[in-house]
Each structure stands twice: as structure tokens, then as C-alpha cells.
Length: 473
Image 1 (cartoon, one colour):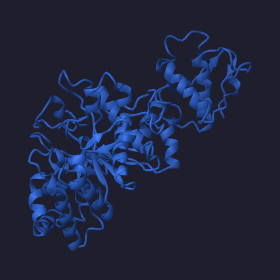
Image 2 (tube, rainbow, N blue to C red; image 1 turned 30 degrees about the vertical axis):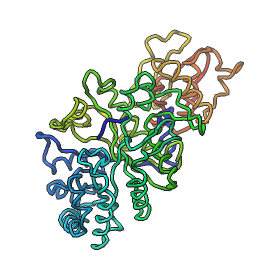
Image 3 (cartoon, helix red, strand yellow; image 1 turned 90 degrees about the vertical axis):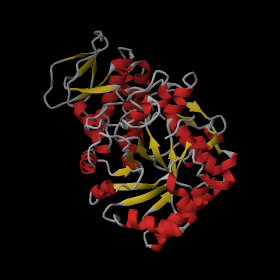
Image 4 (cartoon, rainbow, N blue to C red; image 1 turned 60 degrees about the horizontal axis):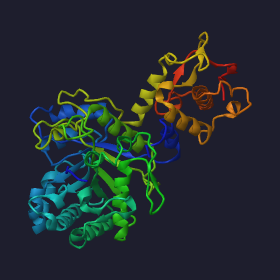
């Protein structure tokens, strides 16, 4: 990880509709071990399984970790570290031996999916850049020699600092001095071997360096006006997607329009130094939680909308022996004692269960609701309704109302001027009617009454003026 310079959807419910319509991406996690207080690998594997995590990325080929992963059903990316690049580039005999000892000794019982040859090599202080592609080629040749090249990809993570230009996204380009010596040969290798480009992307760094021009909502996948790329008219609702498309634009500019990408690292720290603006538990939970929802919703970036996103969160644990600012030791989703730093869903099932559990709670009407805003009559056993959460704010409610009455397909005719439910003429009443229509029409599943926190389920029939809320679409 290096310091460098779409709201996933406006509403919480839309991703689950999209699961049916398009392929979702995948979410894995980086398992770093620069710490002296982490649980033993077999215990870590149990934690991963408990959380439903099926993909993990390592920074080495530690035998205890690879042995623990054997038969676990968890696929793994392993790494040949930067300090071995020179040897790997110099002779295939070295990579033959390395593959025998570090890959064949465990695979396929341990599902090794890919090999990361080095990590952010272009900023390695040991100046190993020119060794990178020869090392990748030798590793691949060794895999082919032993008959496993078709099942194990070879790649290398690059940092966004490899870009010379990243804003606007359409102008993304690689640094001139890297293009001919390493970028083009690496992309050629990736294309020829059917692999993918690994990219480490951290909106946190860009945000902390540009808080005067980048909004926190934009960095955290929250509701925001979006940023328009004036060159192509694409609208970006998240800094993450803008960064990824800058890399896509850079590869396109070199003629590699079909290179697949995997985000090998991304995350947000839960704690930082005073100058690390935005480093906090709530922001880390918002970034990682919203990113997971965005990825599992399916679809891609504005530039490549049909290509699902695959990401590896950084990181599994807080690592107490990492150097650098406080943030470096606080990217973990878990403390070393396996307690969560903050609670976010990591799978589609967890998202659905979390939202459905919320829907079982009978929420009270907002405390500042007046008589015209709505009241609740006697409970009707076995029936539920969906109403607007006034605390969500006017902007979010209006956006959710627009969606429900538009793309969502709710029956909003009764709240049009002159219709039966037009009065009382206020946003909470109209949004409640629209949300309930959507909720009833879509089987009253818990996820159909959330709208990213703008709605909740109740078991008393709401009453706004003389308007009757239906219990069926």
C-alpha cells in the first residue's frame, strides 16, 4: 500500500433487484501478518469461513497459512516478494524451484488462484521495476512446465501512482517513463496469458489530500450530486469508480481495451493521525460497507458498465507492527482478538439478513411528526407496511421517492395533484405512500423497504389525512 494521489446506487433495495439481472462482483480480503498478536492460521481460516469469505490474498507463501487453507474452500492469491524479483528474473531455474516449493507443495488442495509477482514494484525503493516482467514470464513458464499455468494466473499489483494523469477519468494515462519499459510488456503478458491487471486503489489518500475539492460523501459511496466527466459526459457517483476508470482509460490509450482488472487492495482506516482527515470508524464502516454492497450489486464502472467489480478489501486485521502513520496499523476489519472493529456485511446473504432483521423491528413514528405528517392506528395482526423515515432528510427522501415512482414502478397515481392521497401535501406522506406501494408490490421482502435508510417497516397501518394505504400492490 502506498500514499498517492455512483453512490453504489441511490437506494439500498436496488442492488438486490440487480442480482437477478446481472452478474455480481466478488469480495475478498487481504490477510496481512505484520503483527505479533494475531491468532494462529487455523483459527483465522475458521474466522474467514464464519464470515462467508471465500477469497483471500496473501503477501507471501507462508507454509502454515497455506496448509491451514487446505480443503477450506477458500481460494488464495499468493505472492513472490519484491526482494526475490531479481533472482526470479535472472533464471527460470529459480522460479522452477520456487513453484515446486511454494505452489505445487500445496495446490490444488489449497486453491491457489493467482500469483502476485511483487507488489507496487514501481515505487519499490530497491528499484526493481526492470525485473518485473522477466520475473512474471519466468514464473509463468515454470507453472506451464508443471502443468498448472491454465489454473493459476500471474499478475502484479500496481498503485495509482503509476498514473501520470487520473482526473478527469477519461484522461487517465500511465507515467511516460514506465510505458515502454514495463507497462506495455506487462499488459501484453497479461493479455497473452489470459490474466488480469491488479490495481491497489485508495480513495482515502485522494480525499485526505484534497478535502477542499473532494466531498466525503463522494469518497464514501454516499448520496451525492456526482461528478461529470466533461470529456465523455459520464457521471461518477463515487471516487472509487472514477479511480478505476482512470486506469481503464490508461490501458485503453495503449490499445489494451479488453484487459480485465481486479482491485487487489482497497480500504479505509478506522483511526489516523491528526492530519489524516477522515480516518475514523464510522467512515471506514461507510466506505467498506457501501463498497461491498456496490460490488455485490453487480455491474461495473461508468466506462465499463457490464464488467463486474472484483475487489480485495484491505485488511483482515489491524497490524500493530506496520511502519508509518497511525492509519497504517488501523485498516483491519477485525482486531487480533477476532472482534469486529465495526460491523459490516461481507456477503449478499449477510446484507439481506441484516436488512430483513431491521424490518422485523416495529419502528415508532418519527418523534417530530405532526398530525398531518401521519399517525398510526391499531395494529393489524400479520400485516406490515412501509413508511418514510423523516430523519433521513429531505434530499434522500426526495431521491428515493423519485426512484420509487419512476424506475421502481410504484403506483404513485394516488399522490398526484387532485388525487385521493395528494393531501396532506408533504414529502413524508407522499414518500410513505410510494414506498409502501413498492413494498407491497414486491412481496414485502425486508430489502424492499429500506431505500438506503429512507424507509422502515411498521405493523400498524399508517394514516396520512384520509388516505388509505393498501396491503397489496
